[in-house]
Image (cartoon, rainbow, N blue to C red):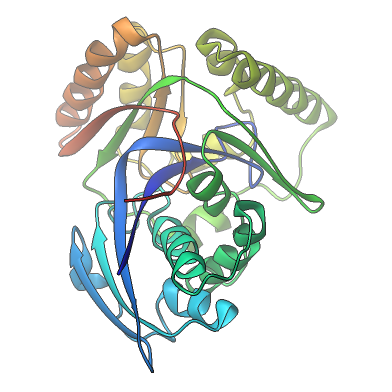
Length: 291
């Protein structure tokens, strides 16, 4: 039996829509795989009742097909589905790493990224790599048509998950179809600033570079209490706040000594808006690992 832990992720980071991603130290999915003649899936953990066990409808089934690696697969969900924290990507990433090891396929971590992305296509219809890349490679990743670039980074963050639902389809539909030249220039500048911050593990630069005039304001409208939570986080020491992936989670970058205060402020602000929430005091960290 091979066991792999794959971390939650946050995609976009404000200015890097469909391109940027980071691995988070927590929460995470844990997958166990054993060789079998046909693939079967068992799921436990948070939100497991909503996840299909049919291999044709589960992200790991596509990974099995890509690697030609039938197995009995046990998934222990630590990343809630529909959280904006890369739940389906964590399972796909863990499966890719585990099955590659189980069947001794000899593929590199970089070669496993597009395979895990095929698992993402099962739930989203498109093989995006912005979540699976950091879940496999760790750190900060830049996914483009030319491939994936990754860099180690150590940035304290708070991921705050409210008990509300935002569908990926709705989050996609509100993305603006056009942008002004001023907005494009601002976004490029912010994305460059964020990238420099990740290479330096500088939370000040990362927080400044998360600002986004295009996608985030549109998606924020789908999240009850967003403005109040964002403001409360900044007043508590957050250097930047944005929607994590498609939402509803919010991601706040801060210094280590402000992390607890930021988490508490975000929870209180969601409570003021009548929304229960959970906060993860975490950081940008490493990717999937064998246990």
